[in-house]
Amino acid sequence: MSYWLINVPFVLGALLVAASAFALRKAPAGKPWLVAAGVMFVLTAVFDNAIIGFGLVDYDNALISGIRLGFAPIEDFAYTAAALLAIPALWHVLDRGPKGQAE
Image (cartoon, rainbow, N blue to C red; front, side, top):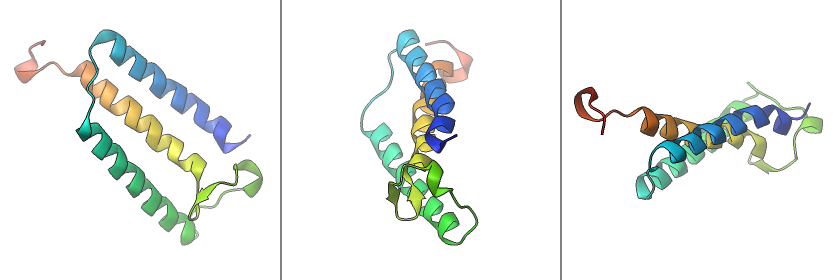
C-alpha cells in the first residue's frame, strides 16, 4: 500500500467536512487563512525534514512518489492540507458566537 493510498481517507474526510461547512454557512476566506496555510506548510517542511534527516523516521522508497522537498516526501504534506481544510471548517461550523449565542 502506497503512502498516497493511506492519505486518501484523511483527505476525503477533510473535503467532506469542508464541503459541509460551505453548505451550512458562508465559509471564511482571505488573507488570514492564506497566512496560516503558508505557516503550516513551512513548519511541516522544517519539522519533517528534521525528523527524517536525523533518522527518526524513514520511508520505503518503493511506496512514495519519489518527489521530495528536501528529505520529506510530498505525500507527507497531505496531512497538513487535510488539517488546513478540516480544522477551520469545523471551527467555523461549530462557532456559536459570543457567550454561546447562535449568530
